[in-house]
Amino acid sequence: MLPPTSLEQIIPELRDAVGPVILISGVGLLLLTMTNRLGRCIDRARQLTNELATQAGTERAATQAQVDIIYRRAKIIRLAILFSVTSAFLAALLVVTLFLTAWFRCEAAWPAVVIFIACLASLAASLVAFMGDINLSLHALELDLADSRAAASAKKN
Image 1: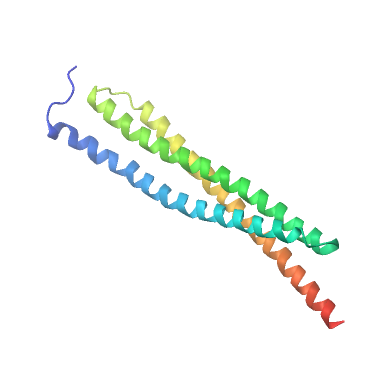
Image 2 (image 1 turned 90 degrees about the vertical axis):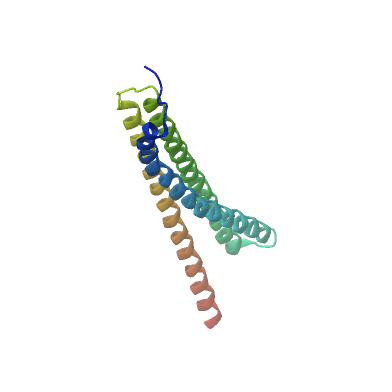
């Protein structure tokens, strides 16, 4: 079979490619959020690590617990970023697949279906990991608040 020779023949494929391109844009915004969170984790971990050098006893243990949580958060965010990048890559691969199947007039839908399902599964995994980071950050906040309450209580006595 000959490939399409006119723009009119390729317009339906262009229309079909809009969905995955919008998905890539949305995942890009999600990646921006995740990389900002990762940067904040790294900055906070460096700050706390510097504070560890001047601390001792229970204060040092509390700060070390915070550093440990931030490190776990950073690993989870890295995993979420990996899944998001994979999703964006698969969406781009889906666009290429749509064009190639149209170009060669291949009627098999399974490659596009498999890539689309993998793309959305990767996006879902990214969002689950992102929620894991949110939960861990709330746990770290609980520890901070407990430390603040304990310090306030000790000052009253």
